[in-house]
Length: 346
Ligand code: NDP
Ligand code: PYC
Figure 1 (cartoon, helix red, strand yellow):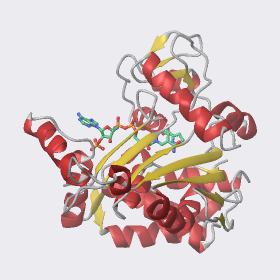
Figure 2 (cartoon, rainbow, N blue to C red):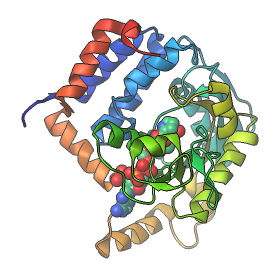
Figure 3 (cartoon, protein in one colour):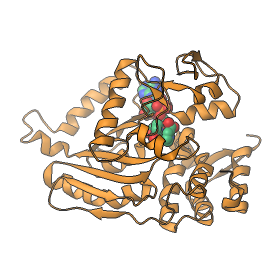
Figure 4 (cartoon, rainbow, N blue to C red):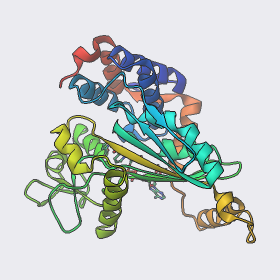
């Protein structure tokens, strides 16, 4: 393949971590970020892959995130585990809270992890997959910043508000979906802009509220929710549960605080975890995980694909061939490694 280079997932994780640490992040923050970004690149999730490295450093340079934040865990004998991210990125805060969330869920059957005061830009599947790795089901959600119009409106108010679900599968990759509640993630529109492609119709309106397929006009206008009023309602639920309920920013408040969409947004995140076996009680209808297999096999049996199937295929390809980066992507990482935060425009 011409004009590409490849690195093993481990090598790329180390490389990205070094860029971020060289740019001013503490090593624990840099490593947690690198793990998530490289997992995205490995799984073919380009909208939250290595192109985000510059945005992380830009946010740091602007003083909109604390690069040396140490998350503080607060847990007890209740169902709510809290982590104060201290103005740092969400990823280290999630890793800090995960063991307590797993322990509380096993003990109580269900528990929640509330992360407050975090800068958040990453994909959520990584987090629900971490829960399925412990045999638990999980839901993760967070607001973003106001870039999406509610159905029937044309003004940015909601965020692209991601929503992810994971279910453990004995002996196999978990059932996981993870989507923006806008038609696509904003990162996807940015990738269309960078490659000079027109957007499909129905993704966005321009600043005057007219339908547009121009990525620049879409970024300056408002994105649309998926499934019209249905996506709009789910997005609103996320604002309520993972914004106001957890005493953190809604997407509008996040944008007001940040003042621009140039930097990664700061808000909170809510992760719910369930122990399926505890919910099933005596399990008179059978083991819930085994019964789930019947359903999931029946979906595939119709020729439909499960969400994350494309991602797992990409993961296997990366394990075999390394993570393939374009010449431009590799050059950008090399530049950031050389120039550090000085090479980032605010
Ligand atoms: P996509 O529309 O690309 O995919 C959404 C989900 O649907 C994935 O789980 C995908 O699986 C699955 N899927 C896609 N096509 C099919 C199909 N034909 N049949 C079955 N399942 C399918 O993602 P989005 O653009 O909506 O979101 C991308 C990412 O952006 C997410 O990871 C999200 O967390 C992240 N995000 C983060 C935000 C933040 O503030 N932190 C804000 C918004 C989004 P597969 O991957 O295998 O294709
Ligand atoms: O891609 O929509 C997005 C997004 C917003 C914040 C982080 N990612």
